[in-house]
Image (cartoon, rainbow, N blue to C red; front, side, top):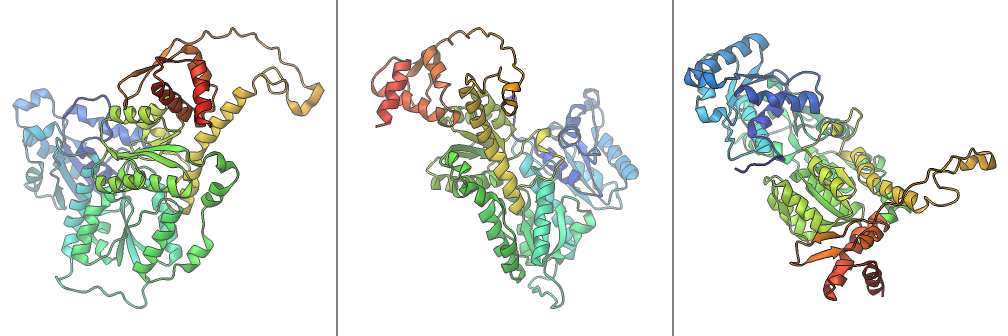
Length: 528
């Protein structure tokens, strides 16, 4: 463990809360001290749910530790059942209560409640939120669907008069656009002629979980959450599972073909009629300003891998950094990073991520809310592509990441920060133009436009010299104030490259500092 002021993932019991909150008719009894009730705010304030999570806390205090905390938990579990009347219950301990070793599962089973009780063993000091969500979903599926398992060796056969059906697995509460992704993919599958048996855990009841085995196959939307449960369903019910995550145009097309093969239907009509606007936009004249832009990508495994593929193959960006805070898909990320000629950054230390971004000086950062803060500090355009996110990334509007409409949303989300930066540069470039300066009236009114009195502004003092540490080189580079001010006049989308080239030129020539003359000498050198 390490002390930090910010973390990408909460403890695993918060992952269990995401599953319980996503479902209907499920209740979570959590053995936890009073302070651990903060987790409610993640769902009510950040995700803006209309109801609080279905969680009962024992909320023991320091004075209770000398008494019988086991009876305190049993009373909380009994009261939760009588008050909420859930169809099933999961029970466990938070990271703090885990140290007491009260065995919430055994205590609840001893109550003899007339509903399924699913005990959770979530090692809070070894695992984190996404693992906790995956383990909780797996235990729920195994407990509730297990009794319906066919005899070993039985073969699956679909009735000839029945349409193929599938389960959509992985969407949870507090997930990045999970609600809208589910809606988008459900519509896509229905147009393919595939019925949806169960969507889980989002919106599913314990009774729905019990009939997961009725589907012909499973669609995995988020492997970090759904993969363990899907693998168990494959072993137990013989259900195959999809492998392609439909984020981006090419992946959506591949997904449609894969699902059509699993379902035994024709993908042609859907592929012929549905398409995203992203391919045309990426080939348009405006997008030539975006070609080969250097992009740094960091997030959960699913979204980071998809973002790298879209950036390189569909938008023409150059991936200069790729990583994730989770280790569930570290192998896949390392393989993808090799294809882009970079080393994958697998870390949950945001300071390491910040140092890598500062070193690489990309022209666009795609990441979580933390990378957004880092990019803003460094003056780099950014867009959020992955949880953890803040309230603004749970929009009221329909805004999926998956499917063809998701590709449209991705194009807008990624490209707008770059285009707005270009607009800001043009505004500063033409600020003193006779037609475009702040005192000019509306141009469409011609000579009749009212004049705006210009306010004189004092010229800002030249900035102090800036020392820029270069992680890959031992020496420090001193940027003179005038040179730093001149660098800021360069358009943002080539500023990073200009800085790197100038610093390399200064090192190669043994210059102790960078002046305006050095900046232009480097420009002439690399322009040959």
